[in-house]
Amino acid sequence: MKSILQTIDLRKTYRVGKVETPVLHGISLEVKEGEFIAIMGPSGCGKSTLLHIMGGLLKPTSGRVIVDGEDISSMSDSKRTEIRRRKIGFVFQRFNLFPTLTAEGNLRLAERIYSGNGNRDDSRRREILRLLQLENKMHHKPMELSGGEQQRVALARAVINKPAIILADEPTGNLDSENSRIVLEMFQKLNEKFGQTIVMVTHNPEAARACHRIIQMRDGLIVGEIVK
Image 1: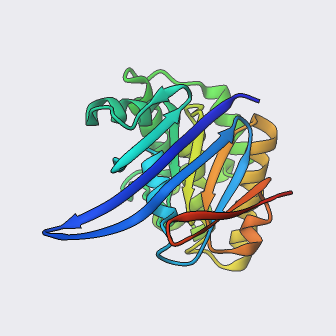
Image 2: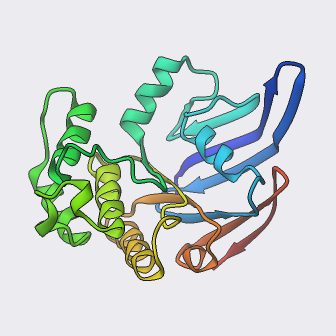
C-alpha cells in the first residue's frame, strides 16, 4: 500500500522565555493509504501535538512530515495552508461548525473554500449524507442538532472534498456512549466504503478498538503498537 503520511524523527519543544518544555522526543510513524489508526496515551503525552504537526497546524522543532508525497515540515505558512486545504480533513472534539449556517451551509462553505469557485459534486454530497444518516438534517443549524449529529456534520465537512487523510482529535470526547458508538460506526463506514485514511487521537479504548492499528504513546515517545 502507498504511504500517505510519514513522520521522521519528529521533535517538538515549546519555549516560553528561557524555559524549554520538550513534548515530542523523536516520533517516526508511517500511515498507509486506507488505514484507520488510533493514537492513544495518557493526557500530556504529546498525542494532540503530534496530530497538529502532522496536519500542518504546528511546525516541528526538528524532523520531517511527509503528506501524500510532500514534505510540509519546512514549508512556509502559506504553503502549509494550501496543503491543509487540499489534502487534509480535520475533525475536532468541539465540532467547530459555523453556528449561523445550516448543516448544508457548513458543507457548501467547505466546498467553496476547497474549489475557490463554488463548484461542487452534488452526487458525492448526497452519498456522504446518506452514509452519515444526515439527509433530513441539512436545513438545521448546529444548535438544532444533537451533539452526535453535529459531529457527523463535522465529519461530512471533513470528507466532502476527498482529502488524502482525515485527522481526528478526540472526536467522541464530548459525546455520550450512544452517540460515540454512532460516530465511530460512521468513521468505519467512510473507511470501508471510500477507503478513507483516518488517524484518530483518543483516550477511549472502545474508540481505539474500531481501528486497524493502535499506536501507544507515553512521555512524547511511541512505546508500543497493536495491530488488529
